[in-house]
Every structure is written in C-alpha cells, then in structure tokens.
Length: 42
Image (cartoon, rainbow, N blue to C red; front, side):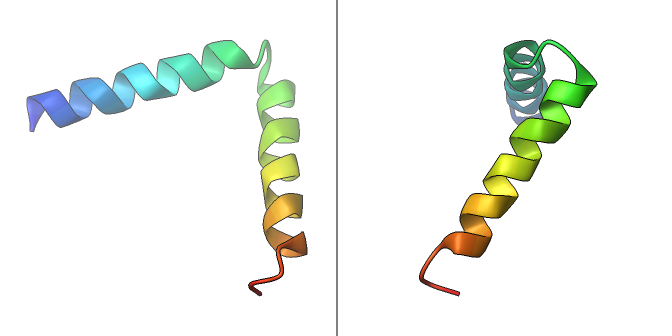
C-alpha cells in the first residue's frame, strides 16, 4: 500500500511540474476532454 501511495505521489508531482501553473493544468485537462469527446468510440 505504501508503494502504491508513493507511486501516486510521484506521478502527481510529475504531472504538476509539467504544467507551470494550475491554469496550465486546467488547459491540459480541457484538451484531454476535447480529444475524448472527438473520439469515434463514443
């Protein structure tokens, strides 16, 4: 369980450092949502 938690924290840190701001994170999430909506499997 501790390994899983550590992995999740590390992954979150990598994602958050990829975007310089929370505003940037919001834009990234929005782009992912748009791609999901445009996917032909819907």
